[in-house]
Length: 515
Image 1: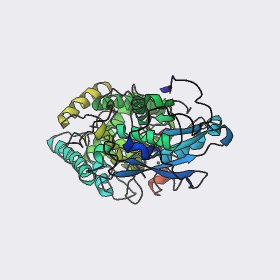
Image 2: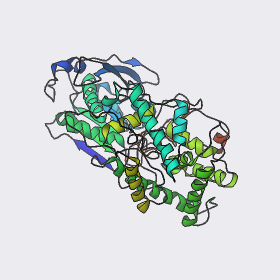
Image 3: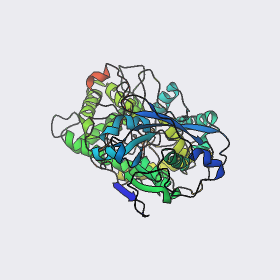
Image 4: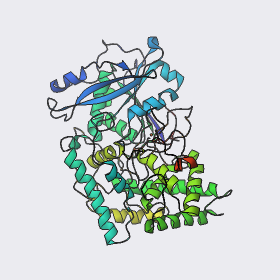
C-alpha cells in the first residue's frame, strides 16, 4: 500500500525556500535552539554524494546533557535554480541504514524529482554510523540465529529462553545510557532537527515499511511541519507486537504458496503438486531440526532456524525464486544447506569474516523500546498457535522473543506517545536480503527480515545489503518492518563454494514508486 499525505495549510511550499520564510512551528525551547540552528558542513564523499553529521541530544528532556552525532548523506538537486528542498528518506527497519539506501537507490528516484530535490538519507540514532548500538559479538549472533526458535520440549524452550535473555541482557549492559532513548519517538524528533538543519521550512519525506511508521510518528508530533509524506508499504501503527507476528506469518504463507505453485510447473525439486511441495519443505525443516544440514563455506551447521531464514530471504522477491529452487534441491538431494545459509547470511548482514552489521542489534533495541511485549514465552507460544491456524507452513518459529525473555529497557515517555510499531520476526531479526537488478521505476525498499527485521540498501563497496517491505508475490494483510541488506544479485550455486562479500540491500519493495 502506498499512502500519500500532504499538509493542508497555505500554498507556496513548492517555491524555492529562503531563510526569510517564517517557521511553520513556534520556535524550539531554549534548550534545543542550538540544535535547530546548526549549519552542517557538507563534504564530497564520492559518487556525486555529499556527507555530513548533525548533533542531537541523547535525551530530549535533558538537551544540555549527552549529545550524539547523526550521519547524513545527500545527492544534491540537479537544477539549483528550481530547487524546492530536501527529500528525507528512510528505507525501513528499524535498523536499516538510510545512508546505504541513498547511496544505492538515490538515482532510482524519478528524474523530475531529482531535478528539484536533494535526496537525503540518514542513519537513525542507534543505527549504522549514528551512535550505533552494539549488543552481541559475531560468535554470539551466530549462536543466536542458530538457536531452535520452534522448541518442541522443555529443554529446547529453556535453551531458547536463555538465548533471548542473554541478548536482552547484553543490550542493557552495553548500552545502559542510550537504550531508553533509541525509540521511534526520539528518532522522529531527530528528523525535525534535521529538517531545520537542512534549511527546510517543512518536511518532505519518503518512508518504506518501518519508515512509514517513523513518518507517521513524525506527523503526529509535528503536524504543522509536514509538507508531504510518501508512506510506501504502510504499517498499521495500532498493531500489537504479537499481532504483527501473526500477520507476518500470513504474508510468508502467501509468498511460499506462490513460490511452490510456480516451482511445480517445471522440474521442481519439491514435487509435482503444490501440496507435495509444501510437505517437502516442512519435512526438510523437520529433519534439519533433528540433524543440521551440511555447510561447505565455514564451520557452522545449517540448523532449522538458519534454513528457515534462508527460505524466507528468497521469498521477498520473485527474482530469488530460481536461487531458492537450487538451494532446496541441494538440501533435499545432497543434504547440503550451504546455499540456504548464504541466503540467510545476506538477510542478517553477516560478513564472510564472521562479523555482522549492527542492523540486528538496532532492530532489537528500537522494537524493545517502542512496543509493549508479552512478559513470557508462554504468551508467544499462544500467538504461535494462533498463527499456525492461518499459516501452517510459515508459523513454526517463535518470533521476537528477545524482549520478553528478559526485562526490556525502560520505555521513555515521549511528548506524544506513538502507537506500538510492528515487531520483526525472530527467525531473521534485523537482517538484509539479496537484491535483484535495480528497478527503473523507483528506489528499492528493503523488506522486513524473515520474522521481522529491518532493512537498508548498502554502500557500493563490496558486493552485498536491506529494507523492509513485504514478501514477494503477495503482500500480507499488514506489512511489517525489518532490517537487512540483500545482495545486488541473488546468490548463485557458485556462492555456495566461493564466499563473497555480504550483500547490500534487501529485495525491492513491490508497494509502489517514490514520490
